[in-house]
Amino acid sequence: MFGEQKKVGTKTPPEIVDKEKLFGEIRNALAEAGDRQVALREVVRLLHENHDHFDWTGIYLLDGDSLILSEFLGAPTVHKRIPVGEGICGAAVREKAILNIPDVNADPRYLACSVETKSELVVPIMQGERVFGEIDIDSHRSAAFGPEDEAFLLKVADLLADFLQGKKGMEESW
View 1 (cartoon, rainbow, N blue to C red):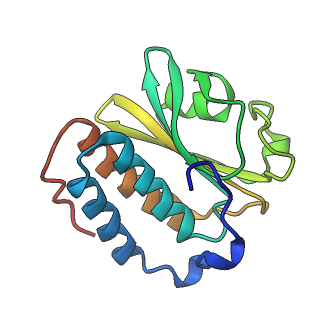
View 2: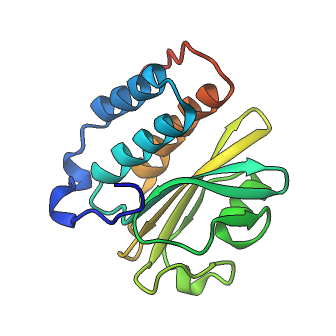
View 3: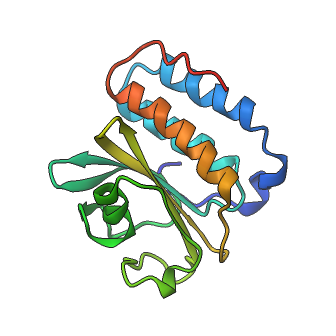
């Protein structure tokens, strides 16, 4: 499954995704994983398969001054290492901010991965001022991401920050 595009027909439209249930599944996957890569792979899978507008779903982890692609589902990318400050992904880490780009072709920071990508949402994985990485989502639809996607992925990023710090509780509720 790693790195393969899922058929759109097997994915769930955003209006019927049970966010509370999905959040619980992600929390459980992190709590039960015996290995960091297995856990991150499962989070990517759960996010990707439960949102039909997520055409590329990945987690980058910060290593020094670069983001390193850890796990993803979707088309292969050449962007396995992105310097902080470069592209939309690097800008999100530098600015420590969510970046929701409705039209990637209109943003000069965009590092082209696929001609099909129309919009991108990047949510830093942070705790306080410390950045661990980011969740990166691409869509083949323009303006695909709304405030509900941002809010949900921010909650997932908070869980991931706890997980990456080794906190076992991850008791955050929906």
